[in-house]
Length: 168
Image 1 (cartoon, one colour):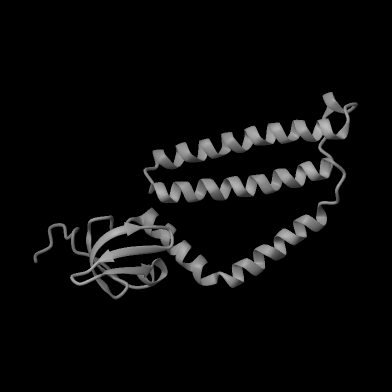
Image 2 (cartoon, rainbow, N blue to C red):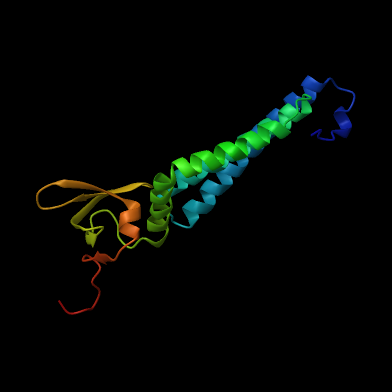
C-alpha cells in the first residue's frame, strides 16, 4: 500500500513514512476537534462526545498505522485481517457490554431523563444520580442502585419529573 507522494518520490522511505505520520497526526487532531465542535453544537451529552472522540481517534490511528507500515514496505493485509478477526471476537465476547453501550448512547441522544429526575426504569424507582455510557446510577429510598443501560432502554421509562400538563 504505497501512497503516491510526487514531491517526495526520491526521498528515502523512512522520510516519506515520517511525513505521512506527521500529516496523519494533524488530520486525526483536526477530525477529532471537528467532531467535538459538532457534537457540542448539537448539545449532546459530554460523555457521549468524549466516547465518540476516542472511538474516532482510535479508528483513524489504526488506519494511519496501516498506511505508515505499508509505506515502509510491510505487508498490511495480514494486519487488517487480524484487526477484522479481533473486532469480531471482541464484539462477540463483549455483546452484553456493547448492548449497554448502545443503550447508553441512545439514552444520551434521546434524553428520556436527566440527572436529578425522578424515574421508574429498569425495575428501579428513584432519583437519577449519574448517567454513563454503560450504566445509570439511581438513588432509591434505601440504597444506591447501578442499573445497566440495556435494562433501562429495553423497558418502559417513566420520568416523574417531566409530567407536563397531565393531571396527577
